[in-house]
Image 1 (cartoon, rainbow, N blue to C red):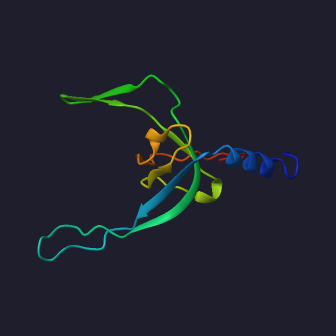
Image 2 (cartoon, rainbow, N blue to C red):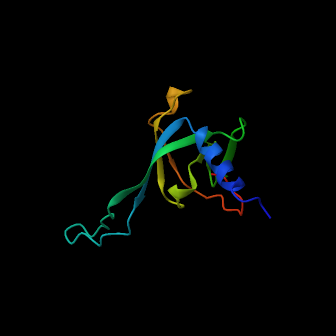
Length: 122
């Protein structure tokens, strides 16, 4: 059993090293179909979190994927946010400020998976 308060302290410590800032947005389900064009009308976009984050690349070695005759390079990126942010797969994360690496500011990433475990700190 984890000591009372220890997990909360660890979570506060994790947030304290989040020097960057980001905005997480989520698109609502389709708003229906445009009668004139027959195309789907995208749902509204809502900002579900704005605040501190930490951006990391877990491996400096990029991967490569091939499908049919097309190939491309991939580079996984981990964006840590406080637990209350509750990002979901499909959400977009825009880095709005980056203290140590200003090149990160303005970059946008799509959430592919969310880490879930008993004693997570971020």
